[in-house]
Image (cartoon, rainbow, N blue to C red; front, side, top):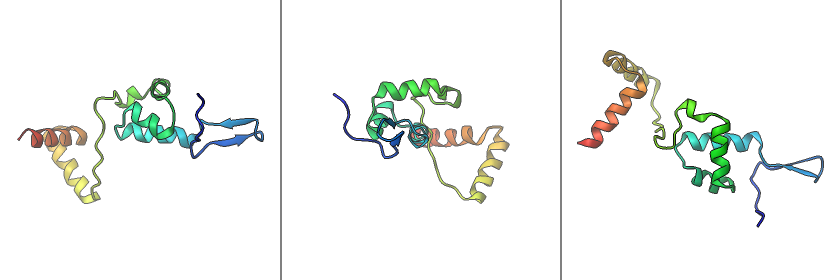
Length: 112
C-alpha cells in the first residue's frame, strides 16, 4: 500500500512528473535524530518511511565511523563557555577527553 502523506520537504521536479523525496533536509533530519540517539524505528515513524531504509542510509553514510552503533546515544547538555572551559581543564588533568570525563561522571552518579 503506497504511503499517502508526504514529508515536509518533498518537492516537485520537472512539474508533476517526479517528486524528490530524499532532499537534503530529509537527510539532515535522519542525521540529527540519529545523533540524538533515536532508533531506526522512531526515525522512520517521524519521516514516514521504513526502518530498513533508515538503517540502509546509516550504512551508506558510514555513520559507524562517527560512533553510531545504535546502543550508545549521545547526551547533549548545554553549557556556558566558562563551564566548558572548567570541564576541559578537569578532563585534561585527569588525562581524559571531555567526552570520556563526562561519561565517567554520569556513570558514577548513576551507580550511587
